Amino acid sequence: MKKTVPLKNNNEFLRIYKKGRFYVGKNIVLYVMKNRLNLNRLGITVSKKFGKSVKRNRIKRLIKENYRQYEDLIKVGYDIVFVARKNEYMPDYFDIKKEIKFLLRKFDLLLNK
Image 1: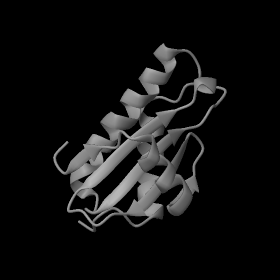
Image 2: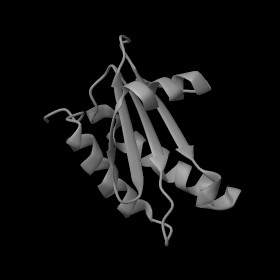
Image 3: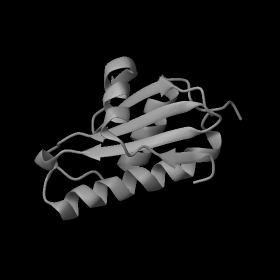
Image 4: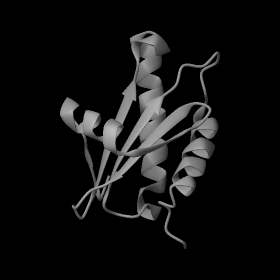
């Protein structure tokens, strides 16, 4: 990840949940908030309701990899938090990819290339 650093502190997540904008997708909720830095900060959360640790880690890896694919196309200067939603089925790579692209476009975070 080139221009992205991870969000780690709970108070950073809470600040984004309270003050940031969000949009709900089928499998993912995206929270976005502008920061005053020259980089993006990424957070990924999955509730224990989602499943056991294997399932939670799998969805986190899928989200992180799909974000990495779009990283060069994302505008700089945002705090981005992805929250996985509980669903009847486990989404695959392409479901996540399609939804992340949709959510990033919804917030106009993708550069026009």
